[in-house]
Length: 513
Picture (cartoon, one colour):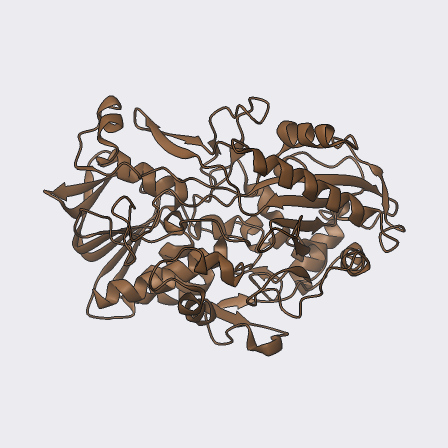
């Protein structure tokens, strides 16, 4: 099997690449995915994503023990299915703000330069104030069809606290509050596979290979010439191998292939192809905590899985099962010294505990608190052939201070007049901490990922960066990384949108060769 381009990973960026590169009938493209098809109801049904966690559709990663998180090993779900994590996520389309991309200081990747790739992807349905969104792209961006009554109260609470109402969340600044734009089409999840891959499947020059776990990239000298999967089968690349396996999968595959810190590779029993010490470093993630309260009225998502709601979804594509759970957001600065929002508040009209894996015992409400610009940096390393994920959460003191300030802001939301008809006392497992020390301990004992790892194949103009601004792996030929792992720093938003943007821009860079 030989193709011009071999793409590893059918996630957000990989699906974009498969579509855009195969649009040229003069090239052949193979898309290789470890998981299987995305035909399960819980993928299509927006509210069903937590049902996919810790199943065959999930890589089901676990971090190393986190010394600053009460010694816990944290669960990290990542999509192992066509569509990747865009088939498992909460469908929130949140680009971030202008500063997120300008702060990279990389030619070709400023906000003004990446903005056309966001709008190229977007097909905004509904409001588009100021023409912020694209309107003719393949990825549907819509408003929720059946938002919960308590979500309107959250938005009123934000107004009561003096936050800015955003006409559109995805403009140059996202400081303020808004209902959440979602990647849905008529009440149904619209993943990267729906938007990009399915329309391209009839092309004779595109081959999709599922159930194939890539073990390594094969090199001839310093040139990538193939990938090897499942114990020895090879798929050859005449032009390029492109890694789109994500912030865990891409550095893991590079290291298994002999690209990384030479001494560490030798210690792991891997033959060194190229000494590139930054592979796997610079790991960043959005750490999440939250405030949970009882709801005074039985209107939340706790009873969303009833037969009536299921029928309403199947027949009308409306009702509670069209929720993405995170129905509204507020981006805030916890101090005037912050140059842009440092905390995101996410409102869920239900008790979203332990990634939704713990069934709720009653009606409750959640305001999640997310640290947007962590100072802490972690790593992905090897233990033999296995990946070791160490995000090093809270290893920098400023991170816990910002999260504590964010939790205080979340508590203020529930104390407003707007939330008074709905918000009751603290709901287990949240104990209602008051002091800074108690709030910090709550973060350490119960904080979790918001599913946004980036940075482990850092792009840069410096010689130490893993990829250059054209996404080519430094010191090697015929090999690029095109996914969120190339992001030098996290965005003040969510990572599905930049992953799509990176795929769009990456496809153009590859086509130009």
